[in-house]
Image 1 (tube, rainbow, N blue to C red):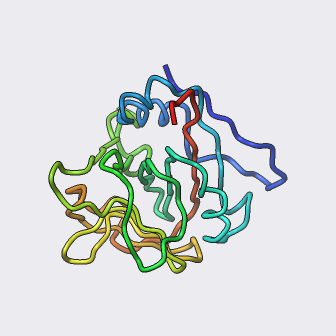
Image 2 (image 1 turned 90 degrees about the vertical axis):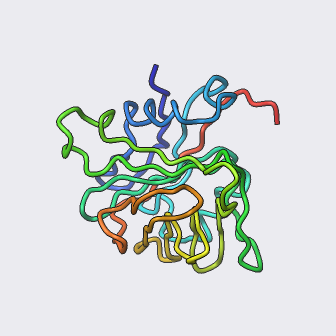
Image 3 (image 1 turned 135 degrees about the vertical axis):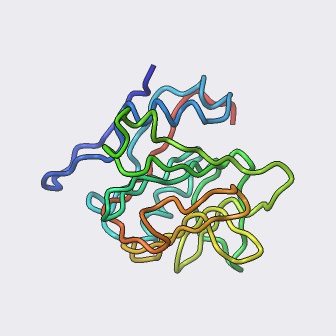
Length: 198
């Protein structure tokens, strides 16, 4: 069953979330077991066109939210992102944090696959015994994944308009976006809500 999506009322003209119930249902299958079965719904916690284009606002919104999905659609229409099991908050000293429950994903370009999103979703979980560069939150960017070559699976700059995606050792993923450098068309942070024991 697909999760229920809760979108706050907004005065943003023509706002339409990128995430659909069908996409959320597919992503839910990759969530950690305990999270998957205790989930009561997904709530849109942050989107620049609703809350303002500020990385600081994203961090203030996400600092108390465990279990979030960062979803991005680039200007070429590719949809990708990552699951963050820990809250997003700026860490001094440029340290990575998080747990191996984190993963990154790509739906590719919707409509490119005849079978719909279920045939285009690719998830990349953290490699057992691999790099522990799961999440990074700095004043100038946020990132997921990394490696000895300093390239992240997903990076979004502080203006929330530009980013990069590279093959990363943490998740053994290919680039997730339409190219290694991308322009953000829409960014969304969804919190997975439920009856969790923490």
